[in-house]
Image (cartoon, helix red, strand yellow):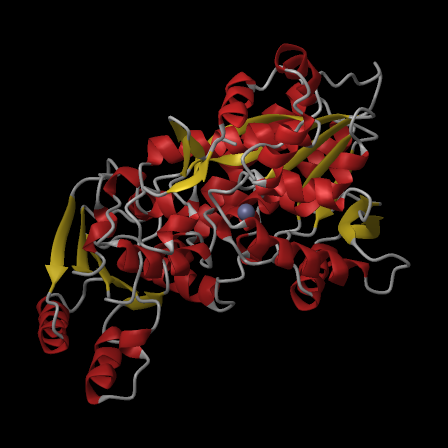
Length: 500
Ligand SMILES: [Zn+2]
């Protein structure tokens, strides 16, 4: 397993300084020969019967056995599974893939490559090296894919938290702040530009793999990367459908996030976009423990016994009403291909009245010479360079001023965005100072259009200070948004271009 470092006879898990396991001399010798290529009997020929030793190493979670040299009959069908993160395919459809081992050419494509997420983040451990963790996660995925009888490839996207703040700027001390902003970002709106870009990349992989079946996430659980992948697949589906007659598309339930309610909502959304779906419930009791082996390779992400509980709950829920105990569920598209447009309105986080107010704001202020973006303490900036570029394209203003709360300033790190001129001014940390600064801003530039970014907190309170801030927010030409993309995605010209 890629998470262990061997020092002498001791094995250490990730960055831990306490050995997780001490190898006996014979275990050490067998382990040294395990190079990912030799079989157990190959090693046995050199060292005598090693079955017991291998069983011990497997039982201790240090080693996992994978099939060797899978041969798939020529002409076997091709299946491409697209996963937002390295682990979603094993978690969501691992049991179903195991049924197809040796009968089907399986490819798993991960969208996200770069990530510094591990379970250590929750423990606030100083284990954040993005280069190292990205490599580790890749090694985990190669191993999981091997167990699942698939080949593994990945695109070059950064994990959502690293799109918010590039990995090299993360520090242990900033983790609580980063965590709060990440939480808001992950559940916030997806970027229409990202959908278009990812759709083009997925299309290139589909052309290369030429699958007979394409499995993509249903995107329940509200994670921005899952929604992005789902939307990108939907965007190319009508074109794929006409250029590759016979290609099947299935949406798989995201494990362990799927619940009765959010699956129902996701299906309703797909139906409202003109898609007819057929539910396929695949019993996985026979492959269940092997699925857990595949999932277990992602030890940087979760403890096997914790995730095991959640997988069992998902599989049991999926099987309810069926004549079996454990299932994985996917929905095959039958009938028409639906509408292949990039629906920014499919962003759950976009408020329904947003389009009308953005349109009004854009019409009124298209010729303004300056624009202020005011990010309040509860706000987050998301992928702000993209938003600033969109603002510059939509408005003729020469200067964009960003007034930004001190606890959000770190989100500017490392990304110039190539958009100039932008003036950045930090806001005072105290609420009284903040109010005075905002009042000064409003009085000094009464006619300047302002975009206020705030997630909640400051302005939703009942205190006197919150009331004053709410009043300031509504003065002059202003618009309030939870994230900048809430605003930029709805700028009429941009929304139009997305639909073309
Ligand atoms: Zn995921």
